[in-house]
Amino acid sequence: MKSALILSAVALLAGTAAASAQDWRYDLTLYGWVPGLSATTDTPYGSVSSDNSPSDTLNALDMAFMGHVAAQNGKLGLVGDLMYADLSASKATPFGKLFSEATFETKLTAVSGYALYRLADDPKIQFDAGVGFRYFDMKFDTTLTGNIASTWERSTSSSWIDPLIAARLAIPLNDKWLVNGFADWGGTGDSETWQIYAGVTYKINDNWSTQAGWRYMNVNKDVGDTNANADLDMSGPVFGMTYSF
Image 1 (cartoon, one colour):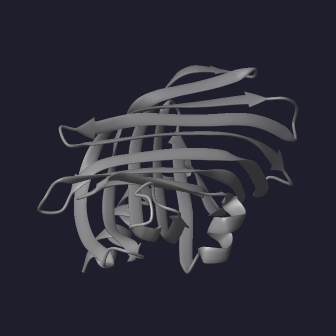
Image 2 (tube, one colour):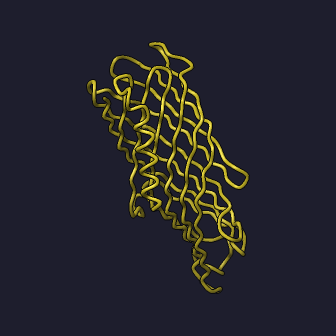
């Protein structure tokens, strides 16, 4: 049911104002993001953290899907982004010889939607700003593997929506190359999220282009019945292919 709602929301965003489709330009992107994962969570023994590099994450990645859709009509822009990732990270714990290691397993779905207004539009720079939301569905499992103490496990899950403010920047270098960036920030009383992307786009022809860049996303949320804090940092290279029409 949740997956159907997510896909419906992305499709609705992509199809807005379809009646005047001749005035809109659409970009459909499939991309790959392999982030390093830094995770911190509360346990009865204190906070524990773990860091995995992008290569570590790739080895531990069970499944991922990522897509991006954008539409532009004059100064109005609509953007939708869908990310699903199953990630894991582990390291030695700070609790002496009680536990041999801490393992974090995260299943994260993030659906973002934005409405942007173009504040600057000339051949040298395009700058948009606006508002949006990010829907999260997260399952976060923590395991402290026992050594002297018994193995401790906790599984928590949560779904929530954070309102966002966002900005987008594009700087054409010539008729083929473009430098671009995107940033957002938002949250509620018990959650906060922000992200930033910077990269370059190469235009192959009028319909096809490729992208490469770096993306960072932070998710901080009190989850579960105990309101244990989960803090995730994900950063790594992004590669994408876009079809425009």
